[in-house]
Length: 84
Image 1 (tube, rainbow, N blue to C red):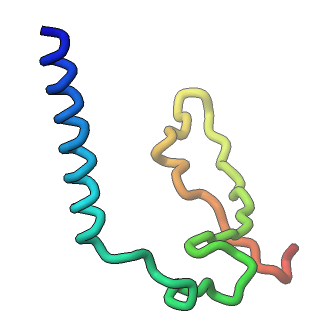
Image 2 (cartoon, rainbow, N blue to C red; image 1 turned 180 degrees about the vertical axis):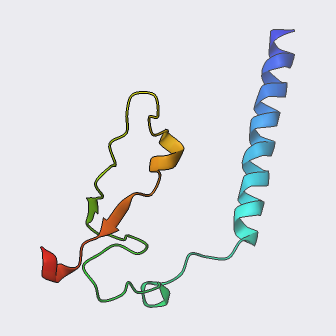
């Protein structure tokens, strides 16, 4: 009985290797180095954006009328390089 289970496991493993080899043979090869895309000539990574923001002064209200988080959303202003 153990020999039969062992043969079934070996057969399944060999079939998996054969199937994997056939699938890999049917795919396209990886691109050559001269076919690779080139990065732009900048020091930043693609899609990376950096900007400096200064917080806008928050108006002071009395204790009964506090500002809620949804009222504070987006309360920043951009700093231009001349203002640094």
